[in-house]
Image (cartoon, rainbow, N blue to C red; front, side, top):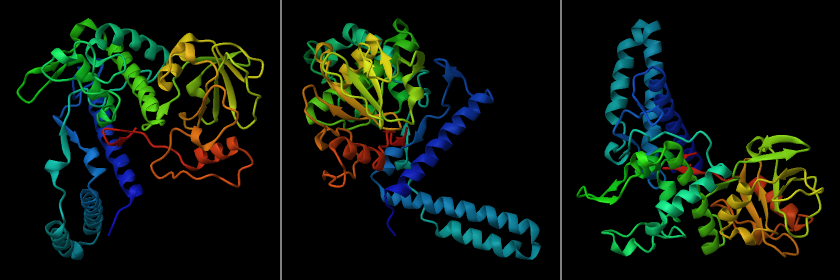
Length: 378
């Protein structure tokens, strides 16, 4: 029996919800201490969901374990009501446990800090990205470099070169695990410090801000290097004015967004999209975003300087993920503009679409993306 991606994704979602549910329950009951403003994860390990992404055998064993656990619950309920079947059911349950292919638990756990499941109050907010950029430039850039590749002017003097922040490193760990590393530093296997922590020099909010910027920078640098967002990028949240009413961009999820960096010819409104003008007001836009923080955040995730942002266009799907980039001066939309694709998406033109924009909209709707952190759906 082979298990495809959907059973694996379902299992990862169940495990994620179970761990986070346990964390919230223990916190609500006051069983765990409060660390950095949120309940602590009281265990030294968490489930290594990233292992399940590459080990279908372990996924199969965990499904078998769940099925047997469910069967034992049914046996217990039947045994309570039907006394004559009690001992046969006990024997059958014992046989199932004896023949069950048990998961290899040592492969399914990974060390984790007390902040493992912590999250910021306002994740990926444009203001947080800009504030984090200022912190990064003053405190992190000399080692990690101005592009996050780990080649800053002080990097060569370190005992170990800093890793690049633009690859999969940020997505292999949960947000709370990255928070702990920034706040408390990192050690090698011999216990020697490889990165100093910020300690009390930064507040918790500042640590979350710099992590927001690092993710945005990683998105932009990956786009510059590969022509694609390898990992999903959400729309940076900010306040916009829609027909005179202030709203958060995150409140517009459920609609396809068309973000236009003002400064060039403004495209005509399209009823299939909710158009947001970024940087300057436009009579052709549904919403106005004059916030300089949003403009800077979008420039960061595009991997361009703030001065090069005007004329760029971005399309976001109904779930709030940035999917399409239109570059200044482009005559029309094309399939090459779809820079955030699912792993299963194969380049192919949609001959049935009336125009390039319609083809992109159909692809976004038909192929939703899935973000993971530490192997778990996020």
